[in-house]
Length: 269
Length: 346
Image (tube, rainbow over the protein chains, first blue to last red):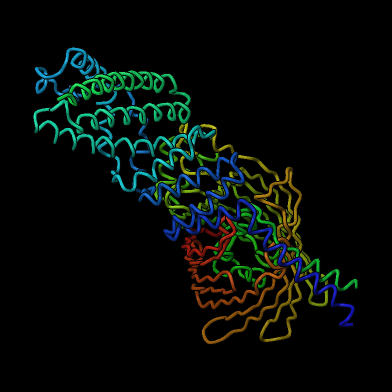
């Protein structure tokens, strides 16, 4: 009898190990493993699993969303950090009266120094920063992530760029807001330091300032595009905001061009 | 060889990782006995809920009783939001209220009225709401949601067959509106959740027989029973709420001890499709004296404790039950829930 059973028993062992390894390799099971790591705060391990999974299933939107959340988790971002402003934060771009804010780049300090083209570009930029100011006040509710951890947020944004679902685009806009808020705060610190030294144009801080404004405008531009997908009913409003931010991006590029030309002048003995 | 093949089949018949509602939501009714005694409610002749769990007990001749019960668990304040979700009235406030805690939550509400007469009974439940969510991933929560709203009508009829044998039959007609969904939190928030939660409908007719052996010539009032629950035909199949029959086999005793009556029983249940074909064995007990009744049960996946006070017209009960269930992603979670019963009886 034992001899008759032996092939069956061997088959049992083989099939059991095949079943186990087949179960482990299913994307949903690997995603579950990754999520278990995230629940324990083991984000690096989760990212390792999800990066491999995304390579083999690049079209699966759930995997890319899990990966983005793993990067965000490693950057220190949890749902309790952004829940408060996620619900109802469409108002971020709503047409609401805002108190007049001062110009982003105060010309008083360097009017006498700056060439006319640069002065004109900065004046134009200040005039078009309405959307930027509106957002900046509301950004103060959003968590700040320092520069060390921000690389993971950039990776998260890349992982779900153009995500096909409204929920995925909403999450991307949340990450974009955190990046924008954090960058704007760093920009403000640099601006304060630069202004205290009377706005030297031939200065690395000025070029950094303009780069960061351009970067923030670019992030917010993508954010408006993501929100137009997350909330299709308000698409027109978000597209209008996106258009305004595109102008800001364009103007910062113009300012940057003048700054680079100025840098060449500054470099001459 | 044949035995080997059968053994192979049994070994590898693992439950599919189906997205299935918790069993307490998908089966039976909501009541104090089902929560405090668990499956052991099939083995005791206790008049508490509007009709007995095991329809064979309806065959015991008794005076007719009209009963109305309101039964609800913790988090009952979410009933409105759950109902809004099920009836496509959910808005941003609904989403914020239901998912704001980002933590596992559940509740259960049942309103039922019935008549338990001599060898027959009927009850109607115009509203039974079940809701449960589990969350995972603290960075971007992924949610497993079950919500159901049921209206049901059930009738029981029973008779004595002779030789201490009783038989009963329950017919239960049920309309269920439900949502069973797994999603990311931002999916629910995008576009204000419009059109995201689309409830499904299901009509089911259950045929649930029960058989009871209850010899009278013993102080211990022993009973042995069989019953079949959740055997039905649905208008449309749903993986979340499958009509999967559950077979019960058990025994119980009840004797006058001290000032009251003490009952003790064992129930074994089979439900194919679970992780093992053999459900855990449930041991249940009750002690009633005067207007007070104490209830308890324990098995591998659940335990419960409760009490009930019946003052003739009003009855009040409280039960606590701990249950281990599948969170929707193949992980086991354990919850302890509190339930309250308010009832009236004529």
